[in-house]
Length: 289
Image (cartoon, rainbow, N blue to C red; front, side, top):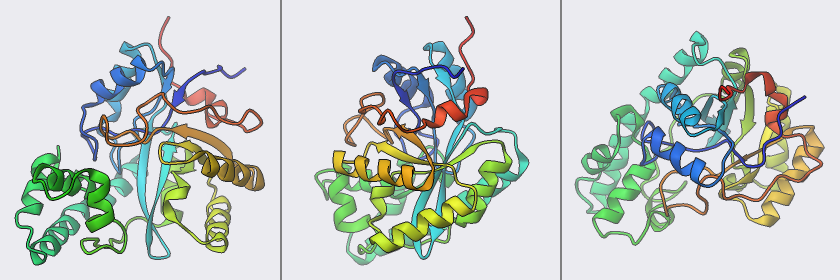
């Protein structure tokens, strides 16, 4: 019998990728909002996992290993969350290392784009905000722009400069969809489509994406996500039913006050959907009693 969880949050970030808090502080914030099952899903990184597991148990939360893999699908970036995998799996570790290695060169190119627009020092400023050079990402540039007074907030930085197709967007070749699903699955975990509303696919292209993901062995989708409206949540609940996918729930927390939701502040999943944690029951690392 699977443990029933009242408030799972299975998508969040720390300074090990593009969040601003150490894992222990993210865990404390999640626990303060009543999270009872937590996962830290840093981008293309597993180094944060032992810190997150320890912090989760210190705050009385059960834990699922997590990662968010950067993927290039038909020329755009999508994200696949992995949950409940073996953090020592060699294939997964190597794949993520290769994916992370391209981040710094991309960041240099983003800095060059800003320089052409008359905004000097963007790469250096973003690098200072990243905990690790290989973790540097667009949110670090966005925070630099806010610190410099160029933008009012991170959202404006993205909509003006950094979002896909904007002047300082630099496309990158991340992992393939097939590789991301295979790495996670071979490590004993479950591959889940992260925040699908963010990709702004046409209906036909979105259907093709879900079909490809499902055919490769993907098994879940974030129905309740920090960036989803109520209407979008209903849409992806319908997609979960259509493709026989389990449903996940995660705030995509990065920084206090930066996104729509802090950990543990999301609405519940629709009751007729299979929650991903019920299918990962044997992979949950529970607090010792």
